[in-house]
Image: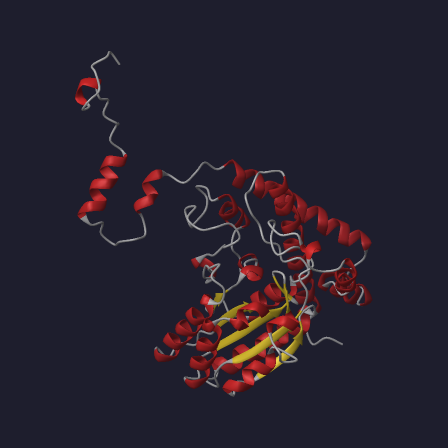
Length: 353
């Protein structure tokens, strides 16, 4: 029997289905040429959902590719989220970031970098600052199994434990770092074991059990908030889809392996539990699907219709006060182009324009 109230479980289920439906739609749009790139988290929805619900709104999250949807769990508007995929005027990042690198200050979710693992040191730095300021903020440092081989991983883990910063490391072991299997990534039996070298508490979790994850994330966050330092959590799951829309996973893994993990789908798992509790049936499931599909249709119509970011925004957000050379460049950007007669150009005979 779960320790989580039924209404909260239903919120989990709605969030899981919302992310799944969004990912399926975005992958279809990419195949249609309406967006350039997308990375789904199919089969891994439980971690961002549990993390979004477990942390306080004042906490900060530093996601990797598979956790960007935590923005939606934390109340970020769906239209703004979609606008970041298109990089248009409705994008709070003003079209400056790559697709699937969503972030938002209103949700305390920081943009990640495709340079694997760099967000980990950022998360530890933010946690250290919170400790120095005596704030109750906790930072979540998200990573995949592949990032455990990066230099930033070791720097972040060591610093976090030495200085006992309020940080929770959330590792999604989805079995594949693009095409590199977990067995080639580490010679340890688990990734949680790596925390032992830093004397950091660690736990290995079922990454497809959203309820168990929620409780574990809460425990780790409260431990950090109480001043007891970081925790490393390995969430064992599986990347059912491709690494991104640029990837063909059939080249390096078998369909039998994928089918085995599909049977452990986190959404179907929670659905069975809710059905057993009398809180979900086929009719209610269809009604939820229809509701979420209509929500996505409406948001997509608004987001996709937005124009590109205004040119003037090129000069925003870099300096509090623009230096002289940028003021000149901004003025030049909006000055009509001068038309030259050929006689004004060296070596070009004069001809009527």
